[in-house]
Length: 230
Image (cartoon, rainbow, N blue to C red; front, side, top):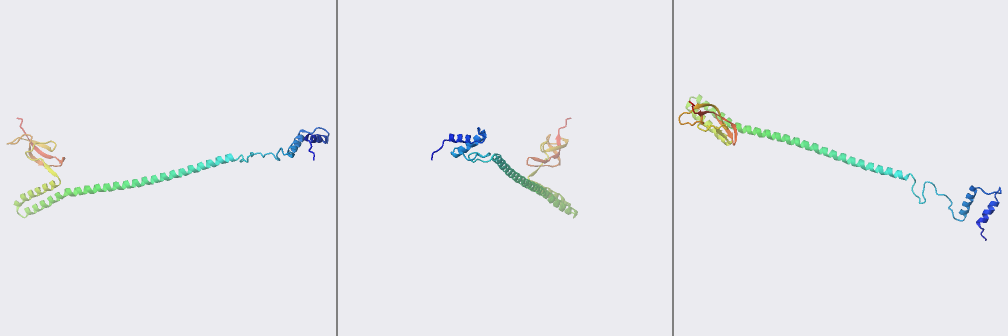
């Protein structure tokens, strides 16, 4: 079978045109496409708009992916916020527990101080109660008509009280003949020097003073010898 030249076919088509004239541009384009398709030069269909030759995604895929990324970031932020709120709640609970424990410690400390104070007062009152008992017995003996026992009894009471104070490490300050010390003694008045007394010494003790260690509890109230200026 003899293959005909395409140009000959074009001539035939021009000759066969109904109007006998030259075909229009649209007709020539259609005939050219039909001829190329017949020879396998052009594909059957044009590529569809909205897709590429490699079968890519639709134009809407880009914005959709960005939205998914934003949703993921939002979810991560919400999770971090929940973790932070949980941590804050835990810290607040710990702070409340610590405050409650501190209040408990303070109450216990206050109770311990009060108990220690009460115990100290009891220790201080013990010698006074012993003196009370001794003086009561001395008065009972005097009422029974034996006054000679009063002086020895009172002396015994005083000696017992001094022993009790020594156990508490309390000593008396201010004795007749001692040098006057303004840190330990309080001068009520002065009296002229008499006999072998020295100026500036204690002539009489009105109230005894007491000290515990280096701390003065009560100064001794005394009368001090002083030279007569005349």
